Length: 52
Image 1 (cartoon, one colour):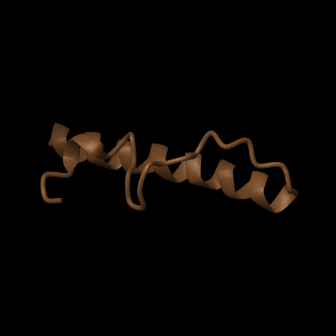
Image 2 (cartoon, rainbow, N blue to C red):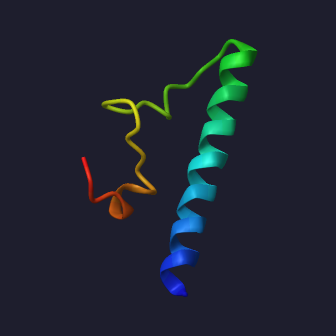
């Protein structure tokens, strides 16, 4: 199913971005590239969220 594949790929991208942000945080030099406007907001999974 292409929708399942798209969703799993989006989740993978979110996880990779979060891992990079967390590593930067631990090293003491966060770049701010992972900033979100509100908690739970994710650019890769946004199109899959229909309930707010």
